[in-house]
Length: 55
Image (cartoon, rainbow, N blue to C red; front, side):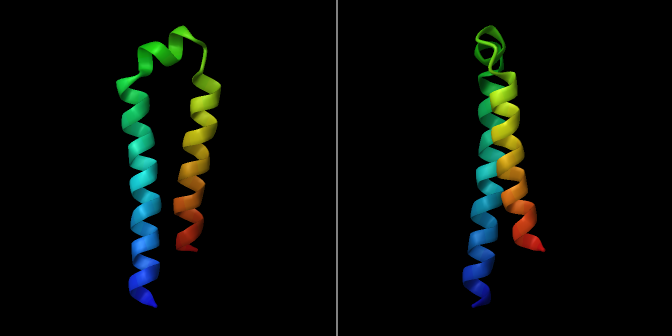
């Protein structure tokens, strides 16, 4: 039902926000090891999951 759909949307949005915080907290290490592209792809994936769930 609607409660389940809302819960799943909140979960996907929280996952995206978690990814943003993780990148912010680990930005120096990510840059040092050249992981920018990998992190960007992961964030885009999480964003798409949250956005596509709305449509």
